[in-house]
Length: 389
Image 1 (cartoon, helix red, strand yellow):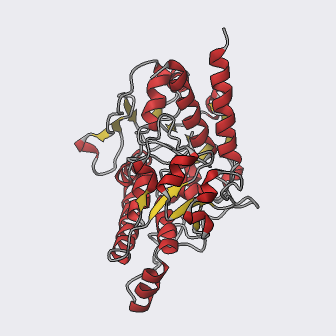
Image 2 (tube, one colour):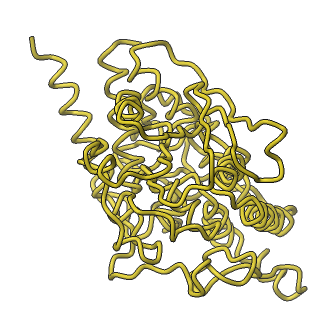
Image 3 (cartoon, helix red, strand yellow):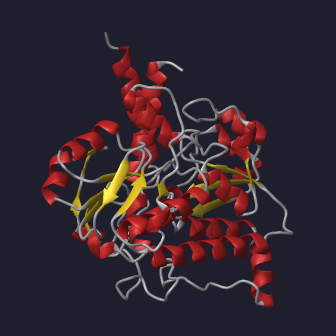
């Protein structure tokens, strides 16, 4: 892989994750960014581990993060900063949002109740180091897409930074949730959230167990899609379908040419809410496009590796297998327990602040094709810059 390609991949993944409208497009996207930021080879991030003595959720606690750094918290953190939308969602989901003083404040987090009242901590796709330092948090949670230089700058400023592991599966999302709960002294709430996730996934799998498995192509725009081995690939499979991109040589960054998509002829296209297939693209030749087999999903739930991803799986499954879900409803085997009014998980009947985790502004949190277009533009800019002498 050339340096130009590595830079392009890094740019694509960083922008996608920080805006929250495109998400992780490959199974090793986070570790790719971490590796290219360090100028090294692509390697998988180590699994976070806590010492056995901390299983009672007491403090002090020491955990090893994705960078291999032992992170120690002497006491339960009061003020925290999350540098990614998925990290913020997880904190909200376990009811610890009152401790968040800084986070990305944009369309990727607008659905989190009260998020607009926090301090925005990003400068474009980079971390605003000065702003984070001025907040003086007890803990900074950094997704693995955050550049190593930014993490080190925050640590050099005296802040405690925990860098999260890559998330390429539902199991990884569970692990992130458990770790976040441990860091914040909210192990019970994290366990409840994981239990709700497991129940939701099991309900989906049981409902569609005997249904056909249509092929689905997740359309990010411009042919970009989710690769086999990504958490979204597992989401498609769990919803009772197969990833149409699995039979296409996507390359790096993962992109399918129009002719390849037409040849694969998926049964369905999956797009985020507010988006649609382009009218002047070869995909219009596919059976799915001609028959209008295009399903939608909440952009932030589907693209953020965080607990509400299971709600996106459920949403996709209900559209693909409406008959199976209707039959399950009639038989009383499908239930919507554990959801707030806005569909958010609610294992204990509250969102942590006594009200649904809804957006407190008019944004629907779904940037549509704005983010994919920005991704493509950024890729072009990066490649152009690399061609300069």
